[in-house]
Length: 340
Image 1 (tube, rainbow, N blue to C red):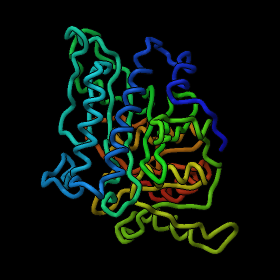
Image 2 (image 1 turned 90 degrees about the vertical axis):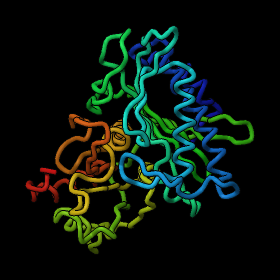
Image 3 (image 1 turned 120 degrees about the horizontal axis):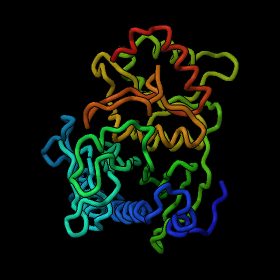
Image 4 (image 1 turned 45 degrees about the vertical axis):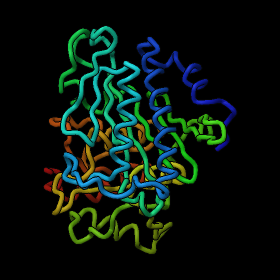
C-alpha cells in the first residue's frame, strides 16, 4: 500500500471532525498511546541485551506467568495515560481490577476508559518473534463527576469509540480505527515519528491463509475439525496455507494485509475460549469490521456479546468475510457447541 509523508500527529488533527465528541480528549489519548508505544518499542528492541526477559515470578489474573517485559509495558502505558489525566479509568489484562483516574482537580470529569493488553504474545519475546499491544476505548456511561464503575468497562464491543494495536516487528506499526476505516502508521526510528504507511486498510474478501493452533486439534469442537479438513483439501483454490505465529496481533496483521482467517476456538481444555473478550476480541473485532472483514464467536457477532466480567474469555473467528462465513457454516452444524 502506498502511504504518504503524513505523520500520525498530523493525521489525528486532520481527522478531528470524525470524533463524535470533539473535545480533543480522544486525540490526546491516541497521542499518549503513540508515546507509550515508542518507549515500549525501544525496550522490545533491546530486550535481548538487558535483564528484562523471562518471568518475573508472578502470575497475572489469568494464571499465566507474567513476563518481565509484560510488566514493563503495563507500567509504561499506565503512566502515559494516567499522568496526562485524559482518561477516567483503565483496565489492563495484567491487573485484577480496573483503576480510576481522577483527572484535573480530582474532578472525575474525563470521558474515556481504556482497556489494554500491554504485551500480546510476550511468550515469544525471548525467541525474537513479533509481539504487540492491543487497546480499546469506550466513552464512559456513568455521569461525569463521579468515579468510574465496572459498568463503564463492561460495554458491548459495538460501543467502542476507538481500538487499535501496535506490532513490534521488523518495523513497528500502530494500526487503529475510530470507526472511520483502519489506518496503519510505521515508526521511523531515526526521527521517532509514525508515518501513514497503510491508509484505509482492507481485508481481501477471501484469502489463502488459515491461522489456528493446530496442536490443539484433539481438543477442538467438531465444527473446527471439519473446517480444518476443508482448508487442507485439494479442491478449487485449496489447500490453504497454514500460518500461525502465536502472537495474535502478528497473525491478525498479516491476514488483514494478505487475506486470511484467524481462529482461537473453544477447546475441551478451555471451554469458554482462551482470549479475553474485552482486551483482545472486542478491539480486534472492531478493526476487522472497519476493514471490511467479519468477527464472530462462530455463531454470533463478537461485538454483540454482553460482557459480564472484566476478564471474560470468548472464542473468536476473524478475518476475510468469505472465510469467516465458511467457518461459521461448519460450526452451525453443531449448535450445542455454541453454549460455551
